Image 1 (cartoon, rainbow, N blue to C red):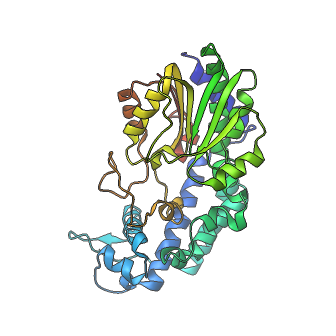
Image 2 (image 1 turned 60 degrees about the vertical axis):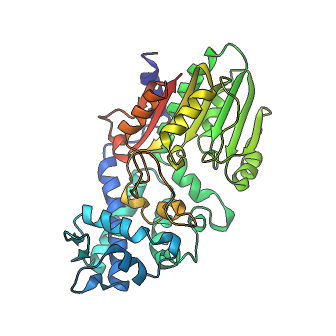
Length: 372
């Protein structure tokens, strides 16, 4: 379908309601800058990096009082600070010369961040979450507070909606995904069988269900690791063909080989221990001509450093990765890595958005639609 990508792109732009995206790159940079400066300020307050000498990351983690499972995170931060030119690293991997943010610099960065969040169409909950995460860094590192308290304060989903749905790039990607589903769903020749993996708060589901409105659906299986999300979805969605099931993608996928017409994985496939193996399993579930829809972040931006790493930590520390991320603290695969794994799984890419020359590409989130 050579024109599917074009039509999906147009639908995504329509979903943004004519928003001006020309300043997206600068806005992302402002969000990233505040996060980096906030982390640097915390390291200055609480570690030896504010004086002479050079220190390995594990000593810094100990000074910060990191819980065992979060002990890898300060090293992850220091690597990002080094990449941004805010700390030096010697040949033995020890850090020194940390930039000390002044109060005026932090105030300016905060003002720029809040303006950037507005420019990117984020509700007030998102900049508030970034500021709250910076204030809670000591308690997050000490495992006194979980990242769920940031995304779901008091059990409410408004902040998570701001992160995964109510912003410029999410509206674009979900709108484009819905258009792809609208056009591809007619090819099955029978009632549709749909599986959504790690559906969370249903941020993408909410756009896909209306797109299926003109088609007969046998079932839409909404899955997640947490019963909280299943219960939330039951209250939120009313379609009679919806089913709900607990599912851990790191263990087993449903045993329905060659039977599914659509598998959806929105902002969750990177959680798999081996992304390529997950795609091979997904391809095996699809009927010939079936489709997979991926929404994925393809680059970790510093703005997520005060939240996402805490969601990744397992009881024994960083979760095991067996793909290109093995032996690293990388959260995401690159676009090229995803494209490679899709091809090796026998999945032909039909949609790869946003386009390279689109300002939205600066947000490093992509929609990939592929066909078995």
